[in-house]
Length: 445
Image (cartoon, rainbow, N blue to C red; front, side):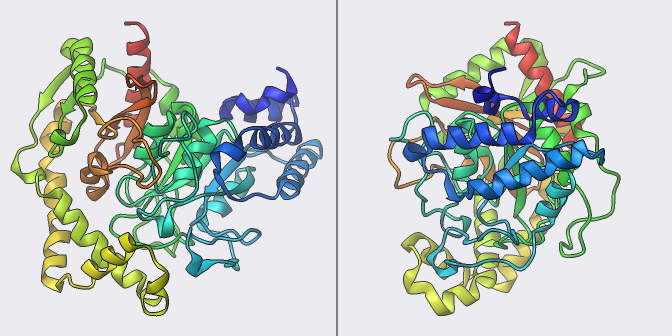
């Protein structure tokens, strides 16, 4: 391959080529930097990027390989980080003027894991204000007049535009799945608690989850697999065997998968073309899919989610509120004002409902391998004042279930329209295997 086109390589292929000596980490990183220079003026995906620092890491990875040192699964592969993930060698400003100039003293747990896997920590991507709703500067890579989604705006756009093969984001509502759908890439949000959040901006312990962006199911699985583990700084993680996510993504299901088509409690928000596209998808899958009505239990999920999220945000951002609320966006101030009014009883009731909701899915997942549902209400909305409606992600985030957005469809305007697959808690490997099967199945139609 032409060295100038190396930025288009899949991450798994790039890592293999670097291990084999077919290409160098420096060549791959240089190609990614050249792509940034080519397209980012229009896209604005980066909050911080030091080309020499990225190249320096790549040269160090090449030297390690030449010296015969072991190479990790991501050796020499550039990975971008949402700018709420702490890095000891780069600023982490959380998309907020209140944190301008902030340079952490140590890496987040996931950054340490990336370095251990041999990755080049390429730079920091734009996030919305404190990972909430007020947009940053990033544009949609398919049309600069449309939103890239949020809050992981820059990560999704950077991968979609081939500035990097991989990126990390986070999701408290729909901040991985929605921008993945809008930007036409793969977005994977694993089971809550699978990936440690130590050193990542804390909004909601109950809801915050690290996610990944890639240009294939296998690449998303490869990246996520390196991030699984226990960290004492995150009380929701636990010691466990690392699941073989990449192997699962490459494997054939032992039985032909069955899917449950779920319209969900917010189906009335779907655009006409989204509703039609998913009806056609269900028809194309024939007897491999059956429709499920979630009933009344799921209809209150949005309110439960908002109660928990805003109450926990108000607690975690209390210092910012006391010292800097006049410099916050109106949307963030409104969220924190509502959160400060949530009663302890309402908060505890809302948290208690999560286990009941998950239990209600047991019967569904006994009959299917994954739920299929829209990733967003439609394609990326025009304009940059909003990052779009996260409602099609809310229930699954609330329940802590693994979810994956697949760029399988397009709207009439040519913009991407994601298909969301959802699995039971802990069913990450099976979900990725089912996603690969679905891609192959649809390619044959």
